[in-house]
Length: 195
Image 1 (cartoon, helix red, strand yellow):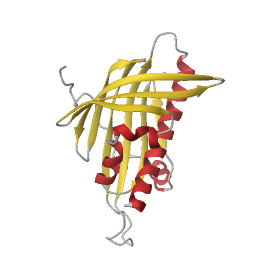
Image 2 (tube, one colour; image 1 turned 90 degrees about the vertical axis):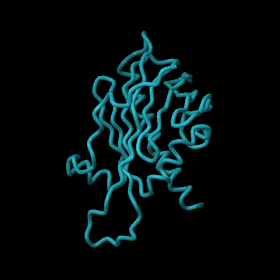
Image 3 (cartoon, helix red, strand yellow; image 1 turned 180 degrees about the vertical axis):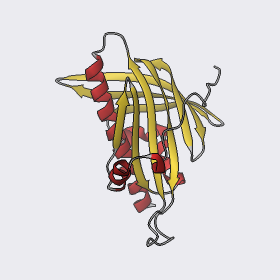
Image 4 (cartoon, helix red, strand yellow; image 1 turned 120 degrees about the vertical axis):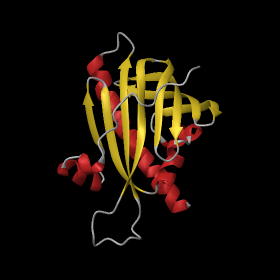
């Protein structure tokens, strides 16, 4: 299967390019979500090194242990910087449990970026990337020994299969993305404490 281009999109704005309100929200521990026409940008600030965040992001086989709604995750292929991962997720929608299966190709630039695209599954379209941006201490009063920080951005373009109620899907998908970033931040923190 041919590899896909990782240069298809402009990167999400860096921390310095965000509004003062957004920077303050991130520094206060909030998870930022923006959505327009099925394109989501979700950001979180994590007190950890790029390598610590990377270790969690690429721990595909163990996603069911720490990411909400992921009930199965299996690495089907892995060579060099390319992995093919199949995931099954379950989501409660009113009184129904909705199950979704996706298989993605992931191209990794170590400790920096993971580009992904749908190979097959229960979506009409799914592609995007994870971006890790190291943040320098901006407060001159902070010690140089202060914990490193990573701005983790998740940019996703998604379209559900035909017949799916679009507004409901977009609301639920946005909620899932925020829960996922919160879970990743928590897992990084727990591994750092235990490590």
